[in-house]
Structures are given as C-alpha cells and as structure tokens.
Length: 244
Length: 229
Image (tube, rainbow over all chains, first blue to last red; front, side):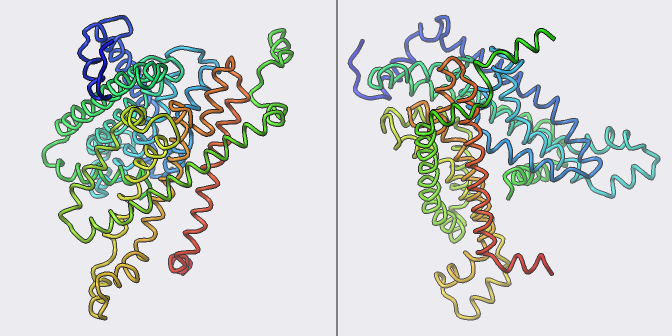
C-alpha cells in the first residue's frame, strides 16, 4: 500500500489500477450490472406509466391521481422499498431491485405522458374529430405523436433518476456501482477514502453521461417545428411534477 | 389449506408487531428524534441559504442562468455519490448527512422561490416603485410576500424529500429511521423492524407536510379569500 496524501490522490491511484477494472466484481462488471438493472427498471416503468398516463390525458381525468402518485413516492424512502420488496413474493435478487427502482421511475413518466396529451392543441383535436376519427384513432394518430417531446422529456428525467437511485441497490447487495462505494465504507475511512471517492465519481459520471445521451435523443425525436416549444414544454411538465 | 395453516402458525416474522414496538420503544424514539432533528436542521439551513440566493438571481438576471445550471447539475448527482464525495473530508457522522441533505433541499427551494419571485406581476412592481419603495422595502413588503406561495411549495417538497433522503445516511451510520430499516435487514430480515421504520418515515413526512401546509394557509390569508370568492 502506497502512503498517499489525500482522498483525491488515493482515488486516482485506485482508478489507475487495471485490476480494479477487470477483476470479477470490478468496475466493468459493476457498470454492466448498473445499466442492466436501470434499463429493466425504466422499461418496466414505461410499460406501466405510459399507457395509464396517455389514457388519463386522453380522457382528461385523473390529474389529481397523477399528483397524488408523485407526492406519495416522494415520501417513501428508496431504502425502505429496497428492504421490503425482497421479503414479498418477489423474493431476493434482481426482480425486487428492478421493481423498487421502477416505482421511482413512474411519477415523471406518468406526469409527462399526461401533460403531453393534455397540452395538445384543442383545435387539432377538434379537426381530427371532424374528420371522423374515433377516440382510439385520435389518441394513436394525433395525440400520441404530438406528445412525443413530453414522453422523451419524461423518459430522460426518469432514466437519470433511476441510474442515480440504482446506486442504493448496494444496500441490499443488489449489485451496481454503489457496491464499490459500500465496499469502501466497509473499510476504515483512511484506507477506503480513495475507493469511496472513486466510486462516487463513477456513479456521478454515469448519471451525467446518461443525461447527456438522452438529451441528445430527446432532441432527435422532437420534430424540428416542435423543438423550441418542446423544450419549454419539458420544463413545464417537470415543474408540474415538482408541484410548482 | 395446509399451507395457509402453517403460514399462520409461524409467528416468527410478522410484518408488524406491537410487541416489537413496546420492547424497543427507546431505540425507535431515539431514531425518530434523530431523524426529526436532522430534517428540521437541514431545512432551516437550506432556507437560510436558498432564499437569499433566489433573491440574488431575481435582482441580477445575469446570475439566474448560472444558479439554475449549477442546481440542475447537482440534482443529477446521485445521493450516494454525494455522500462518497463528502465523507472522506467531513468524516463519518451527522455533519456529512446534514451537508448532503441541505444541498438537495437547497436546489428545490431555490427553484421554487425564484419561480415565485418572477411571478410577481410587473404592474405591482411598478406601482410599488411609484409609491416610493426602495429596493429593500419592495423586497420585504411586496416581492417576498407575493412569492410566499412559491417559497412554501419549495419548502414542502424539500421537507418531504429530505425526510426520505436522510435514510441514505445509514452509509455513514447516521440515518435516523433508516438505521432502523437497515438494522432490520441485518437482523435476519426482521419485517416488523423494517416496517416500523418505513411507516414512521412516511408518517413524519406527512406530519411535516400538513404542518407546513397549515402554516402556509395562515401566512397567505389573501389566497384563501380569493379562492372563496
């Protein structure tokens, strides 16, 4: 062990050790786990939240429900869900972790799907009705395409949040990059400081990377005429989530 | 049928047990007290920093962009990573937990307070100036009272999420009720302990939210009159 001056130097030393990357349970393994867990959780969240959000937006009812879901999940600690779900029928292992994280992905997905359909120009809706569209056709061919910028904004918010929260899965040995931080805390702070800091940098870096990539995707899937509106809209929907 | 009977006959690990609550009331109360005190201290510190920041961003438009950008970037940083950044410097203890939760609460309050301040109608601002209010007079008599709903929204959101976030403090051994949940996991998955910690967390958030909502109603009587009319 090299005597090191401070946590930052220790973190650099830790990150520069190739074995810390390639070992079983090393950084590469952990990144893979982290992305697999997060991806599954966001997918599950989308499958649950989008149909409900789009339908509530289409019928124009249930705005109160959306706010209630957002407030409820805000008050439930992630740690509690991670601890409780494995003790239910889900059992120990990855499914419980994925479901726990998906619960926290649902509010932004739901709120943005709802807002996206609600914000569709009533004239476009009337025109479609006048052309003889049924309710289902209206949702599929008019409201859904126009809500895409919102759906993308919600997806981005949810994905970044899940990647960030997935670090907590390490509390129940669920894998992911948080495992590195937890292992560091398991050591003495003087010895583990470098590893803790390195783990923190990796988790934060991954969250930022996901944020950047999805910001790009959000821009690509938004049709050009909607881009400026979409950005403002995304912010508004996000504000709706935070209750502002 | 036999399965159900055997399940009922197993008293070992119920989801909730008054017996547990009675026998461990000291531990539970200590955890609850620590959780409450961490939350109250964090939110107070956050308000004292966030409101001046929001006012600065409101007065000097050039600061709005940077302040919102920094708070936005901070929000993408995972809470566990923030603990990891601070723990090697601040050590293992309450100071680290407090710093982390203050930082997150700060963001929410700054954003909502700024939204509240920018929603003050320009006519009102001009009228105040015409009546001879100076910058500070206008701030305390006009802008801040009118921004109060926004500030209170931020305060409520920050408080509720702080209650949930404090539990992550178990990583440095100061998680309040999180400590209870985590100990339940380690005590061979003792469900009653996990559930008691969780329920108290949610209840605490609810109580704080109701208290702040009530305070908000008392502080902004003009909103009630408007909605009644």
